[in-house]
Length: 433
Image (cartoon, rainbow, N blue to C red):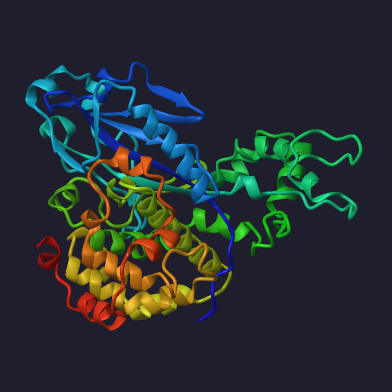
């Protein structure tokens, strides 16, 4: 089994949460957020029904994404109302009656089911028929515009010139930022029709850069490859979404063991749930539990990237999907997630862990690797509450490291053999004790 080729797609997220007043009653976000959106350094806090939503500026780097999230978290301190990062709440009838019709509805945009030929997922209940509301933590993966660079032919050009956004008469190099402005307007799912909106010169420039190989000497000699397989993976959710279920959905069942998680799946968060925004894919299965701290956010966004890269490599005539689905079926993965079945998710994880770590290129960019997977198992045994409180704002203020560094420095592995055996015999009841 070969490791995947590595590159950095754009990672974004929308994480839903609630506001409560001083009497601990949930209040619709439309009463706190005066406008539809609040811009903060190109990141946003938005109204999303009863819920509010964090929309940080996307980034190719988890550490940079962390900074955008932290600024939004800081902004929450300015409100008189208290943010609540539960994945399930029950609204009072009085509060429901006081909200606008727009805030009462479910599913403002359709989502799709990867296990049902990409057909639209149908909501079986109307928003006005229930006082229950859930909060998701959706991960966005998109074409990495920041890394699409024109490789200069002038060998004398300084390294700094490669990333400089300023126009330059000396080298007469077409700067990448003009290209990015063009590419940012493209819906990657409708590229052919989108190109009709551009003139022939612009189309030539866009095609040139989309075919261009990414320069590996810009980013410290990291391994990059042609961006086109990533684009194809984003265009083929039937391949990519089941891999996201394996890499993100199954670990979420192992870690998100609250009753709220099981209740939420009655409305939202089924396996294979996704949307197709213009920039790529929105994976909608996870709740908001992983926004509780930066190490958790780092873990799940890193796992999502690993899944996307596997899909991209699969499209390049490799056989990762055959290998993984010979080990575990899509139906098993789907059932474990939809039923929030801890024991089944653990069984799937144990079957697939060698596949996961063998496809990791290095230990810096892949959160489950040869070194960290033992820490992940101990983390599951200990439970999230041992390390992170329910005070999300305070957890983020602590400025923890990303998952790969944090787990090694904070999770105690006294006996590897004992951890492996305890994980193998672990049940959800043992964690709750």
